[in-house]
Length: 396
Image (cartoon, rainbow, N blue to C red; front, top):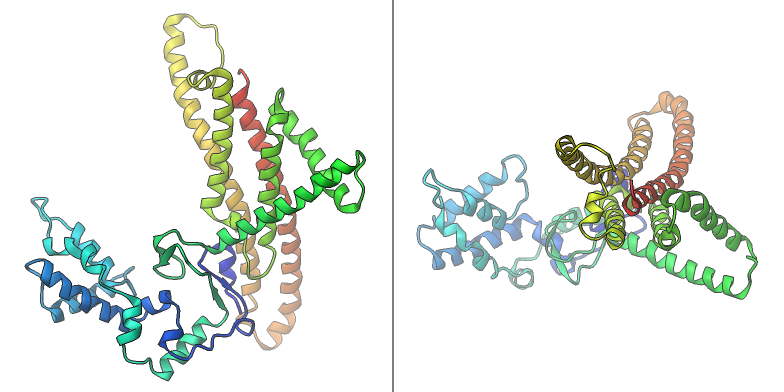
């Protein structure tokens, strides 16, 4: 079965039950590049190639046996397990002596030496992997649908190495965006044909759009709110779509990632401050953060200066909290649900018979709660975004 923790963690593959995507790779040639790079035999071969090139480029390079021994010893340190030789050399290149000089000058040539390493060359020259290793790797990779990476290379299944790498949440976000384009293009075309909405789906969408426009965005922003309605509706349905994907097994919610929620909050900040700059000017939008006060000059200057600092800090903090709030609520639900289901993993016999129905019932209840939270958090994000934009585009 898939790992439930993947619902709250981004990766470069989709996890499904092993029987849906079994791995039947038969030789070294069939395995993806990222998996070969993680293989200890490849990493040892890579270390020897890099050492030979370093010996040509620099002086003071230790012998091959000493170099490999030191690298393998470094791999056994906490946090370094499975890291390739380039990470080891990068760390050596950053070490300094007491005189602030490079402790290992020869290690600074590692980028040039690393360019010689090619996975394809290893495929062509390495000894065939044993059937036992292939069977073990197939067992690990069964159920993992690795996302192709045409624009970059992966360090492992959770970290990129170079270039632009496509993650699972990116695929899901593009899916939500595409669905929004298709649905609302159809929605707009239907409304053009008739002043009165017709059809259940049209009425459902119309209810969402009208409620958000009339009860959330316009009251939140005030005068001039209509020009912000399209972008805020887009935010609402995008957040809602990403939240709802977290309810589908083996997918996960993109809004459980800081990169997604903080980017949305940053977009709100740019929209609000950008609109404020168009209205009050590039300097006036910042001065507008301080409320108007009739104070004597001697008192007014220090008070307003302190208030300006506090308001600027508050501006960034409240937008940061906007992103963190969305993420925390989406992650919390998955963690609680995971904890409930995990209680039955270690149970057996009569304890499972007695506790099993309770665990299933609790999981269903929390799933219903998560469904409610998915809509609630999309609403709250849109509501707070409206308030923040309104505060940036109106005089205090």
